[in-house]
Length: 375
Image (cartoon, rainbow, N blue to C red; front, side, top):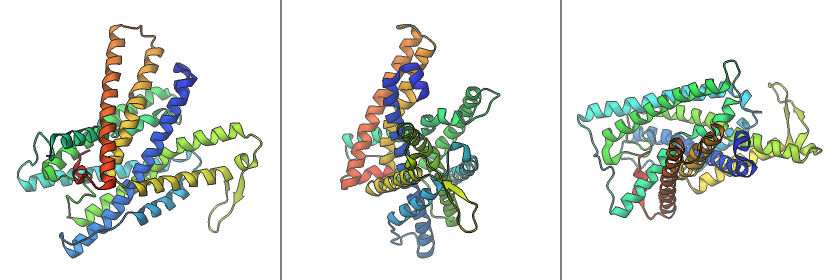
């Protein structure tokens, strides 16, 4: 937001702040849904292994969301990004682990099938309009694929120099995008090649795979551990923004500024602030509550992807680049960047409309086919 204010002025800074914090908040809601789905998948996997693949193994999400929320209430008391290095390392290791498992299982299933399932036209629908809704929702899911862009500068601020932070971050971004794209393509393509039109929205929780059940369980445990850390990565900037605002507005308030020492048995003493405890706990509780109201994995991801893709990943970076490099109006580069931004806006609108339609249909049970949208 500081970068936006420097190049684009205060008015657009407030718009950026609103969109960024809404996107971070929405991503945490998606993580709650995903985590509960994975925890439920572990129980279903064991049930299918014990009772058979046709057994009625059905479980709810509520208790898993509450359990995840209890963990995050505690984890949310981590002071800031600078104290989260160990958590980021664990999350990264878990991410690589379950990605390799998903890729390996999809590849093995294709070999076992002896042929490539599916087709170029994708999942069939009852009519053209349903097909378009599914395609639009898929655009939203794809737009959610790289959410790190909304916290890129916050992460860059934690880096040490030399070398310059922007050069380090640029190198890290290129490497991470390459690796992430590799796994997305491998898991998505091999998953669709393995299951065709029956491909679940989430390979490791939709039960395209039943065996080896212990490997499915292990992969889902890795996802849960990854998302415990991922939740914190996305909520800490919101905490910092809100707490900084309260500190500036209420400088004399003890509730906002005072620290109190606590000592629990077998643990070192630590300091707590009333505002941080109340606000951070309320934040976690609210994400759990909304996730319970809309526990629809693909549809929620589509809405979030559409909301943050164009404004945060395209519009603001393009506008800042034009100002920073002092690119003249109607030059070739100006036209190219403007055209690119308008095209991405069009994609965002389509993705948002399709995802909202899918979310409403899932909520009111009018369109079961939305559960098969591929990410």
